[in-house]
Image 1 (cartoon, rainbow, N blue to C red):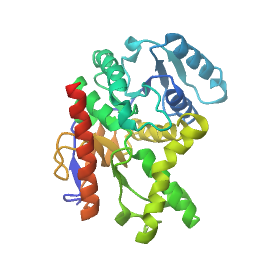
Image 2: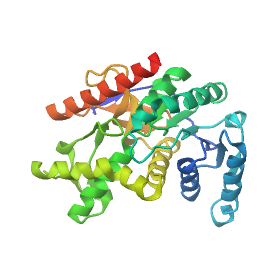
Image 3: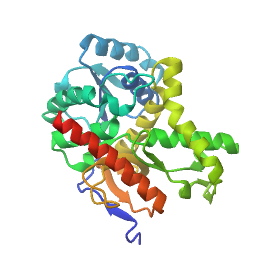
Image 4: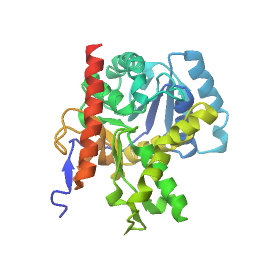
Length: 320
């Protein structure tokens, strides 16, 4: 019935059972993810791993102290051997992004950190879905897939999920409605080359044709959003934690939820071997299908430009 709308992206069976999530990296983002998942009861067991073992122990202990106020949950710190049996691994480890630093500047610093993590994880939880959050998230997701040898559907980047949420929030404020009533997909790179699909903005399902003269100012608010948070508090953590929790919930719950996340885009829209955000169907396999969404010329060109920037970053990393 769906015809060519949904394109298969992976294959495999799905089973339900004990929900174990491993979070690698207990910095601001990793801890915010752990707290959000605990409050929202996403998992039965959370394992925190960090190069600083004492930090991981402290964060796990701190979270344990609040568990009597929620549903039963096991929280502990550990090493990579404790990742065995996880359904989802969330990778947040990496250097902190500065206020005036682009995500791509982080590339070489975080690639070395990620390579070590991938080497450890591949031997203990190659059956899990890996959710990459470390920036620059699209290139880091590509590297995690390439270095791990995992099937493409099981390495997923948080991608433009947060960009979309920021855009929905800004549009909702301008219209005076709940952000959840706005549908405003964002594809491409998580960053300056993100591609807002103006032609697909809807309010309660009704198309919203935003005047061209207003678009640049609105989108600039989205582009500046992360930097504005960093300038005020030094990091972004709460928004991305809620986005990651939403993504992990879609995976663990086998929800078949349509989300813009970073995946291997090769073969879609004429793109080559690159990770960037497309509209996908997310379930216990990871990215199970890609939505075959028609794009106008401007959107298509934007996606091509994003791919070019990311492929150049991939090439520079390979050469370094």
